[in-house]
Every structure is written in C-alpha cells, then in structure tokens.
Image 1 (cartoon, helix red, strand yellow):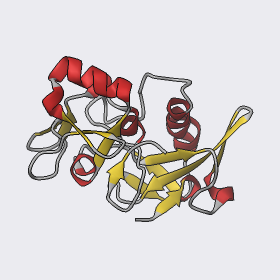
Image 2: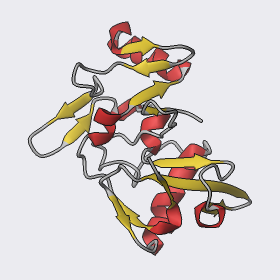
Image 3: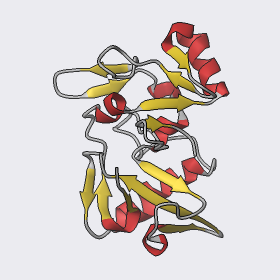
Length: 176
C-alpha cells in the first residue's frame, strides 16, 4: 500500500464512499475508548494485544458506519477518534516513506512530513492547488500537532470520518 508525498496530490475531498471504514480497523487511545464506552457501551469496542479498537461488523465495516443509498456517514462524527480525523493523511515528524523533500510541510517553525494513502478515492493527483496546500492540508497538520480540534475542510461536510493510518501489514488504522 503506497503512501504518496502530499506535493503529488492536487486536491482531496471526502466523497463519503465509506471505503476507509470498511477496509481498516481503527485503533483508539484510552481517552477515546472511554468516551465511546460511556456513550455507546463496551460492546462497540474490542481489545487486541496492546491496542484498543472500534468493533467491526461481520462484513468488516466499522460499527459506527451508516450507509445510505448515495453516501456513508459516521455515527461518531461528534467525537471521532484522531485516527479518523486524519485519514487519508499520515503526518509524521520524520520522513518514514521516503521522498522527504516532496513530503515536507512547514507550519511556522515546525515541520511535518505528510503522506497520503493512495487507497482513498477522494484523492486527485497532480500539482497541489493553493487551496489544498494552504488550507486543507494545513488543517490536517494542525489537528495532528494538537493545535486545532475543529474540522472544517478535513471531513466530508461533517458526514464522514478520516482515519489516520498506521500500516503494520494488517490493514490497521491508528497512531504512529
């Protein structure tokens, strides 16, 4: 599963297809787990070796994925885990997937290396547009760095989650 440096992405928009919620398991931290359990019950989560996850249905989809005829919506939109807020972007402090120059993103004095999961259907390849680079991508980086919590551009109009991917060979979303 290749990760593409952000400079090779012209634009990104969530198309509410639901693939991210069907293809990956979402790793959650303890605080996120606690909020989910408090609001929805323990049965909506599972634990693995050293990790907590959102439960998946028999078809592999997230238990909070709501499918409609023309789109999908996240039942956790009001309290999405950070992994979901950041998907399909992987924002790192070091260039883990190569192409450091193309992945580097400066935010003031801070620098991040941003890659995009090529599995996302909302990605449009090419030279990054001004709006994507200066507004959408900036919002993702600010969320990853803990400088922002509100999502405006980094969600499907409040309809759909964006998991952050930690690829460990088992198609698992989570924190790096």
